[in-house]
Image (tube, rainbow, N blue to C red; front, side, top):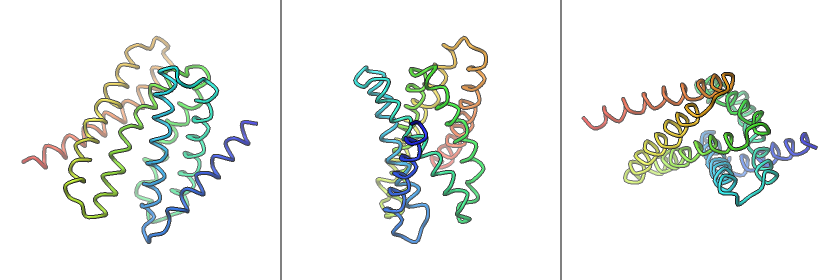
Length: 196
């Protein structure tokens, strides 16, 4: 049954990806598919944490995320145009997969961590507006991305790490958090440089 759900969600991501693959730029459907995933997964986390959806409904959202990860890895494997992002995508998605595997043990922690996908929304909107040449909105989404990344990835992740007592889970969260700290450091350097 789980296999069928996952396969169905890989197929859904295939359909979504190819419906946006109308331009000559592979990044366009990748960003659009990522944007949709960010909306769905973060909304699932919010609704689960506020008791508006059940464990079972959130599980379906988790299956959707698993389908997204699998299809995204396939895309990054097949398209040489994006090979420079391949290794970091594999690493990030591996951490995401570990999180999904822990969903059944720790649905609240998973749902809290998936809120980090909220920062992916302005990230992808920034890319899309940049492609359209909309400088004002690109800048707006850049700042929104920076702020949301800090709140939902750095602060949220740090809080979860602080509250955990299980050593194995702390190690897993530390790896995820280390990646986010590194990315935030790079973003901060870029922000400081742009303000000079």
